[in-house]
View 1 (tube, rainbow, N blue to C red):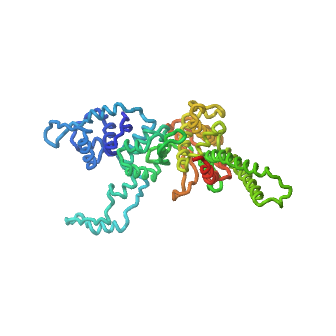
View 2 (cartoon, rainbow, N blue to C red):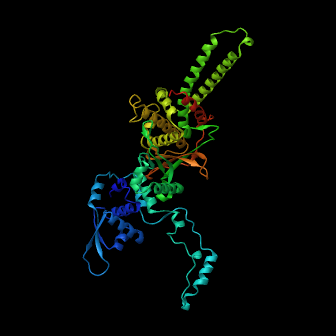
View 3 (tube, helix red, strand yellow):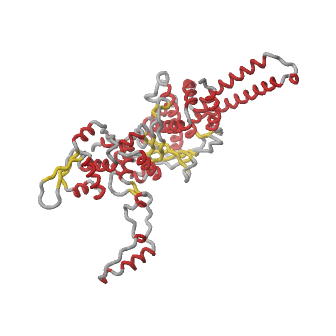
Length: 506
């Protein structure tokens, strides 16, 4: 089977048309013509009649599908349907490697409706009575009355049922994300506009699709992209898929989950959520320390120019100056405390101090959210692909960026490596209490856990997936504590960052 359709960018080719072509690829392959009537063609491709006829007509008008009449006896006219050679040539030049999650793609390619939490309520007594009274006995020969809309069984295509199912458009978005997962379940290098071109959807259409998939829990986490770069990396959208979701067909692949509770941001900072806050504090403290020391030196120089033996005889401005010196000393002490607290959550960054300081001066709050998601995704990639290398406490991973060549890439890598090492240690400690488990055969995702209203962050879940379940052990889920410090790093940098920005030369 070929997979180029998942890499074909054309905003004019809608999701329904792409689904039609994908079913053709699954049936015979796009290069093989099909001789059939319209109804037979749609039946073979498992397309519903009304929507299938509409999609086929649109494909013919667009020149994507060609239909040549075939001589036949009586009955409905038959045609030889084929995909246009121009499209086939374009597809041939696109990537065609089988995705690691091709079995999940195949599962949700089926036509049968994939229902989410559909209640199987029995009809109420009122409905049954209404049916009995209106229909009457069938053997009396009288014409049965029509049921009013209020008591009819809901049609499968009614909107309230569609809201609880994955439509073909929903499934096409999921399949594209599955096909573009760098690590199974995580997509990091797919921009929003590229996803639009791969699905044939407008901005509002795609936003609606993503909202529905997040509501269902198929997309466990979505960090929207932003324009520009941060630490040398283009800020594309980041998606984490819940590979154990029943809609993807393999709820049993979740081998173990670790849960990291998140304390109130006003009281403490948890490692997984606060790593980037710690980075911001580290950079802010470096710059703020320079400012404080410079101000302190100026005041000390002015104060030591004149010596006073009697403090009561000091002029008011001298007393005020000495109090200012005392306050600066207190600020330096608090700044050093914040710097020390940040270092507890961070890897050694002394060799990258200049890069961290520039980052803290230029990065805003929304960019820190994106960087957190990016570092999480990179850490998951390390766990999924370099588990054995993470055993070495001091050794670098393969393809570690050279800090002398690319400081930005080295900083991103250092943060992700630090996070991956922490998860690696937590998983090994958990496994030692139970039994051995082949962690190097698993794939990992890290997703936030919110309360029922979706407002407050309750913690983070590290989920470990066994895509091939043969021989892979399973562990009970566990809550991991002890990854927090009693200091609000976010509040500190948000309070003091403006001070270092306001002192920048214009």
